[in-house]
Every structure is written in structure tokens, then in C-alpha cells.
Length: 216
Image (cartoon, rainbow, N blue to C red):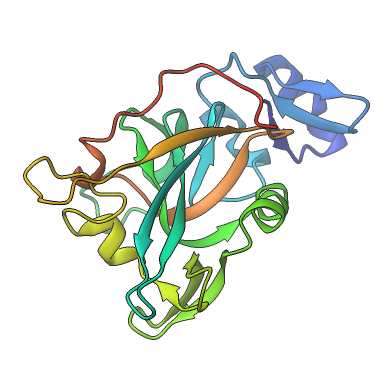
């Protein structure tokens, strides 16, 4: 699906020349799916941190026994294999403030999510209400995280995403192999997320190939 832009009327011809398309029904300019470099549109992208996730929109599912009540509870993680991240233009230059949108080649799951756009929040609230914005005393922050469906207690991201054998950290040598699956989310347009991503934790996950199914 396309990525929404905020283009002032005075810049519409410039946006059009770069390949942006005007969607009259939604009254917005968008970057169409076939464009694989979003950096030229940076001025009109309505957020300047985090990641832009493009189709296919992945949802990773797992489960765990709650650390508090011991009951089995589902877990979810948003994932991506086609996404862009805002990075410093000069990686090793501490004085550099310029940032650019870079296409990331490594598939990932997202954790410690501090911001999501409204369409994704609406989807999660309707389908996975146990994934909610909650304060973590351990991390001392407020993020979107899994909670136990039985007792409501927070299920921490660090253990499940960064510890071998965690729900989203497969380890072939761990004595309790992680079982995960993927679903595809049907969204109207590409979404923005501000979260931790990347790293070796996801190297052994069998991410789906780029194909699309409508999630009922």
C-alpha cells in the first residue's frame, strides 16, 4: 500500500515529478509501492524518526507461560521485511545532525514500541487488546507491550526478544525451541513505527517471502 505524504500545494508539482501520486478519494499525496527510495520525499514524510513499514505487513505470533500466574498467554510482535529506517547520514560523525531514510535489508521484529500510527493502533485494539500501552518499571518507560490475558501483568520485551529461547528469539541449542507463526495484516497504507529493531536475535526466524494475503 502507498505511503501517505503531507505536501503543501506549492510543492505539488515537485512531488509529482519525483513520482508521488495524488489520491483524490483520500485527498492526499502518496509514494506508490513501486518506488523503493523514499529519501527524495523526506521533506513531506510526516515523521522524522523511527521506521516506515511497507507491504507486506507482518504480525508474528507466539505464546508463553505468564511469569506471574503461570497460565499460557498469547504474544504478538509486529515485523517487517520491507522497511526504511531514519539513520544518521554520516555514521561515525558525532557532530553530524543530518539524517536520511535508508532501506534496511535485514528482516526484523519490533520491540519497545514507543509510537505507532492510528491505523495500526486501531487494528491492534480491535484484534489484540492484550497488546497495549503500559508502563514498565524495569525499563522505566511507557511502550506498547504484551500483557497476560489471564492476570493482565506485563510480559517484558527484553526476555522474549533478547534472551535466547525467548518467545521471539529462536535458539536451536535451547532445550525449549521457540514456536512462532506469521499472519498478514490488511492496511490502507504503509505505517510508521518508532521502536527497537534489528539485531542477531531474529537471524534464525523463518520470515515469509514477499507475498500478500488478506487477513480476514
